Image 1 (spheres, rainbow, N blue to C red):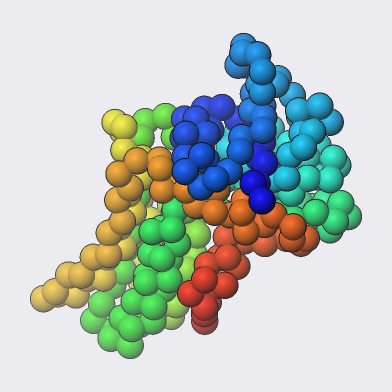
Image 2: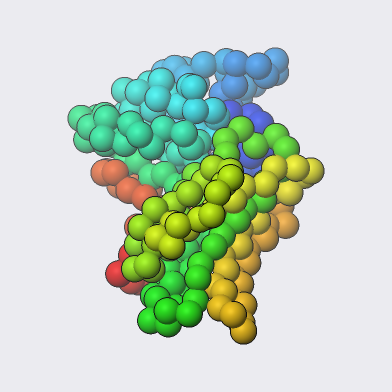
Length: 257
């Protein structure tokens, strides 16, 4: 059975999702964006008309509209994949909206399969290096110059995982440091420039040795592919999920263990 989706937000990610959908035998039933002037499957707003026949919505918009989008989509009884970041301080509210609507909801700060594997690898590495007091830990990220948030949601999640699994670090520092860093702080720097889709580096450093784990995206295709896989996974489900729940189902385990 063909999955029918609505793409909410027709920016670079929305266009990439549309391009890859056919390869996964997914039908783009509608595209919703207030700034797109085209006929056919294109609409300016989320409505019963624009979601008619849609199984799952995929939202890659902006933080200032995502809460309204979630309320509208769930109010119309549709499952939704959310790739937009910047709303995590309202997670409790969103969970209630999803539960009250009885729909399926899955989100991620990053839908890249590679990044989600890096989450697990980095957390495991942190547990290993935690046993050797001579090692310190650091991290940094790079994104293109159009990125709207800094640090990214991916960076924050990666930083939280590292601290959770490295006992000597208690606080994530994401701002500029004009002082000596404290022993219980971990610095996560953000760099913005050029056209880099995304890159994340986690480093473990001792006096005589340095080990780095690095992930570099070559394009937006992997993020789009992950979002489409999430749409297939959430179709027919009810409840509030993270992308890690899908990953757990595929490979088992929990990177937080």
